[in-house]
Image (cartoon, rainbow, N blue to C red; front, side, top):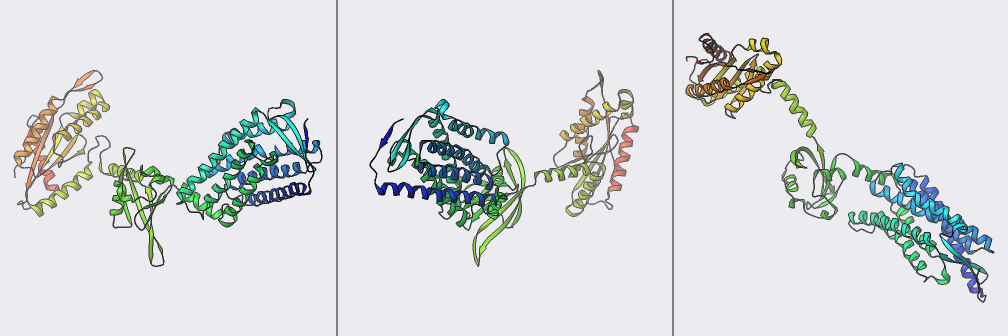
Length: 522
């Protein structure tokens, strides 16, 4: 062991003592911060921050006692004590910043992974005399009555430094992003946490580069400076204040989208749910007028504070309801907040319920109730606007034999295919539905007798050409169609009368050989 002797001077002895006392005071301060943070357990950041403070307190206190060591045994002992704090600081800092970034605790597997390297470093630190992976040699320097360590670093020491620098930079990045999101204001928690996290890595670099006076480890001094800024963040700006943190958590994690604009419609803030709605949202757009984006322009065009919009999200149409709240201070409007809720599922449910009420479940065309409602609407229109209206009542010939010979499943397939074929043969403005059993009703708006007959014959001939397969056999069907045309000049226009007339025309077609079209006389 190499011992280098310097001449004793009263000032030097006093300096080391003062440094030790200051470090002890800061170590005690971090311990108090540890106890204070534990008392804030309702806060999601309190526990990892508390243990971060505890590990810093152990490290700083251990180094303070190392500087006061009277012999090599004491120096070695306190050097090992420091390793119950120094490597664990990095692990707890990583857990703390992870929670800050993701706003939720890390899974237990991830926590174990984060702490593997610090715990292994702790073990290697207290057993260094066996393997010398952290310090290859330990020399002592006697300086003005104090023993100072001069350590030759090993491979694992530099690996630990690399790990510590990585997690420190990761944390600084997290706080910088939060600070940027808050508009680079200095009176924010993130600014003081960012500013405080710079010092340990800065002074440690001076130490490992060999520029520290008396080869003193400057890391505890950097941590002391960090402690000052941590105190400001906590006691001045409420970094561990439950209400502020919960406000942030609710804002970020609520399932309802929240969009905050200033009085010039510029983006101020948004939560995670909003990112799922608008693909253009990111931190770079803070301060941008949202009217530059198509969805933003549509939002600003709405006059009502409550409105619905259909937006394209991931190439899918989705429906959202917006509620606008104006932010005011006194008589001045500061901006507005939009609360956005996805109602696509509700819309789909309403549509499905509407379909169940108005559509036939087998053929997916209108059912009897909806057909009669639509016919009543058409008759009212005819009375108001004049013109004409035709209806086709169509029946499948000998459909009972299809069910008996091929089974009801084959009969259902015939009904489905026929409904689809009729949909293709009528206009989009025409109304098609299953009137009952094997009967279909088609309402032809503004169709004259000739128009109706042409459409009916087109359907009849097409149906005659259809071929169905069932159990390896072919099925061919025909239809009979009765037509009734009504004019606005008719004295009595009502649904019942029209259906009776169409029914008589249908019976006439059936009684005259089926597979034919018959028109009711006026």
